[in-house]
Image 1 (cartoon, rainbow, N blue to C red):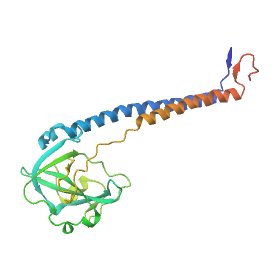
Image 2 (cartoon, helix red, strand yellow):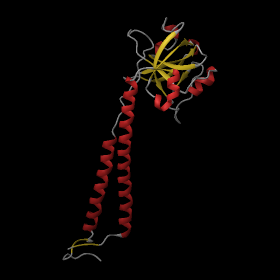
Image 3 (cartoon, rainbow, N blue to C red):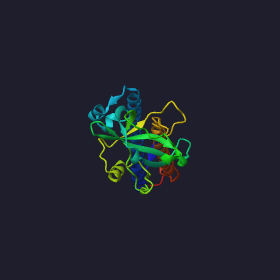
Image 4 (tube, rainbow, N blue to C red):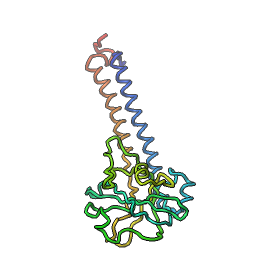
Length: 244
């Protein structure tokens, strides 16, 4: 017969820790399902037929995420904004954001792609600014808000450190039809700047590993709990001399 005399304070502490670890594991399993659904939605939207602006607005920003949207309008090249970030290889780049004025008077922001720092100024890349009526296909994205530690924009050089649409709207005195950006598709000419086609759908999905880690820690805590009582003489067979 096994006799067990648990320590009250230590037991309460371990119960609280065990509940927390199991809860974190369960939460990561929920996040796993959410991430899988998000990736599936992104893949479906990226391969769905393009829609017009009214169709995207009817869907709403969440459902329109990663849908290809078609607009026809004129680029307001004098209002180019540059967002400093890093490219796929970690090198510094600027994304070129330009408002497009549609024939009906509405405006949408287009992320035309990236340029390396030496080509930020339009004069350094002659012929790169679209003129006249343009047919644009872009991927609908709702940009993240600037973080607490995001640097303030350099308004003199029109450089931002996040795709802060509200700030760009305020500076340029424009009003966008939606708080979203159309990320331009890649062009067939590899020498064309800016380089579009920067939309990425390969989101990391490590939630299963995280869940297993939390559950393993919960199991390790159980082992530690009973081992501790065993070494203190409070767990063992009834024939053993257990502490009161």
